[in-house]
Length: 85
Image 1 (spheres, helix red, strand yellow):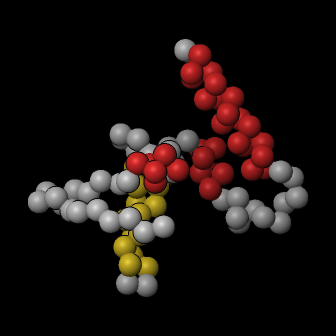
Image 2 (cartoon, one colour):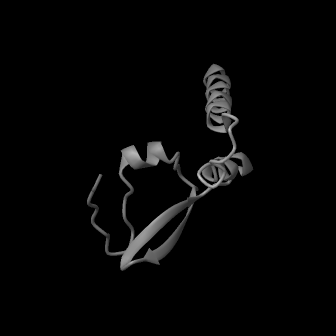
């Protein structure tokens, strides 16, 4: 997916809503800017240690336990608790 954004006179840009939802970015979220092969990269920095752990799922792909399924279920329960409030 490629999406374009215009940089403001103050150097600001808007991250498209679909990407903010996908990566759970909200006001106050921290991202890391980098460079790779002539491109600028933006990487979300997890403020939740469990999200940081979840981000490592590719590194831990040799583990046969369904860590991703467990994590998704926990996040679903957390959202339900937040919606109930």
